Length: 87
Image (cartoon, rainbow, N blue to C red):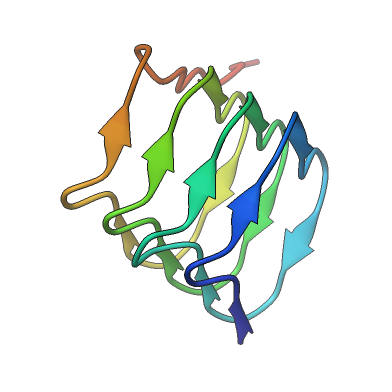
């Protein structure tokens, strides 16, 4: 499990093409002050963004979420991007 609970990311946070094989928790007061990029990120377990704050763009283009993904009470300053390329 990766836990980044209550972490503040200043500037752009790049998780592009990262792989989280188990649970990944960014919830409970995690703050993204700049853009948050999760392009082509693979979440093998649950992904928790509950209560996270996204001040910039939040991009999840082509992200794979195999488990339960939660954004309950997450705050987005801009519309998050969930786009999946299909063949």
